[in-house]
Amino acid sequence: MTVIEVEHSGPIAVIVLKNPNKLNTLTKDEFYQLARKLQEVASHDEVREEILYISHLLILTLTCVSSGADVSVSRQMPEGIDLYRHNLTATVASNMNLAQAFYTHPKILVVALNGPVVGMAAALIAFADFIYCTGETYLLTPFATFGLISEGASSMAFAERMGISKANEALILAKRISSKELLEAGFVNQIFSCPAEDQKKTHAQNEQLQNRG
Image (cartoon, rainbow, N blue to C red; front, side, top):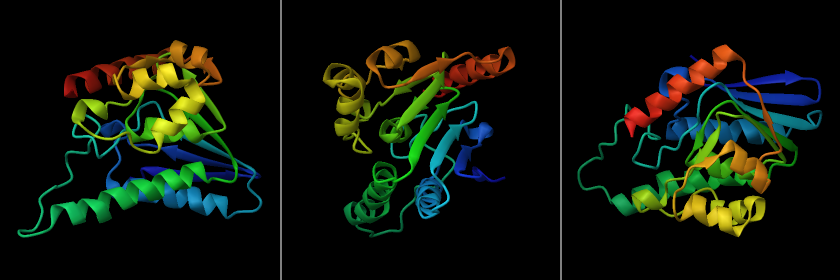
């Protein structure tokens, strides 16, 4: 199954994340592929607008040791490996590459959220030109909870997009920010209603996420 799909329609490119069985959790390799898709679309002169659509579910970060991690991926390291060096090259460089793919993107970037957005992904969407979501959407960046620094240049992007007070709540207090709060803060442009069937799916997925926490 393809987790990240790219669809072209004239001057519009749509990147869709589809991994319902894992709540759109992405592995490090899939995060790399997402960055490559953004970079590839950026190189197409005929594309003037790009839409990142998160289908029904949520996109989560691998680097948080939480429900956001794809725990099915082995984390075992060979004996004698320099863990600091490994993390520097495998994780830090990867995160920087992904963040750069978002904040340097030359096209108009539109993000559509049909559910919660958590961790690294929540940080990255702050660089979009427009963000639209459903009422079920919330944003959660639990970096401080796990003793991590704020990822994806979120300390800068959140302050610029939602204001320093709300950014501190999201990043320092790891507070869940509702769709209504996101709209009031100017983080999202508009909230759309969700069809009843999709709403049921989102409720079920919210419960699944909470049970994994």
